[in-house]
Length: 204
View (cartoon, rainbow, N blue to C red):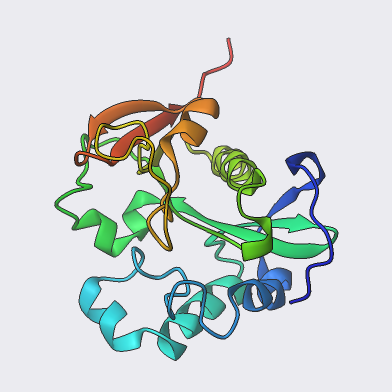
């Protein structure tokens, strides 16, 4: 995918990943399937199935969902090119998340979860994650979500302050970006990872 220029986030548009956008997902994720053949199935499948299917198998699952308009996330575009992805769905649809010991449920509310971001390399550190997060929240609300949950890394913790992210370490998001979008911390998943929530305000 040839990237010719980059601009501020005001020029970025975000859309649900419906059937007509499958080719754009393929273009964005590339031959490696985004994160080493994941195709954004790491949290959606149980661990045993993910290990067996990683690569062509996980791609087939995402393609099947997308072509059936079972929206698995949202896509960010600049200049009509796909530049970023964010996975958002009801938490119950993420098998591995539901069985996670670190990111276990804090209550029985029917939350939606935001579990993954992927941004094309030329567009990193240009506000794309913020736009994706806002787009994911908007989509979830349109589908009836009342509580939306995220699991970002907090770069302000004693352990991480002053450091920079490498490779995949920020794929679940950055806490400061979630805070800016109206999310609040509801639990500490670990020394560096938070569970944060956005609660939809009911109209009077």
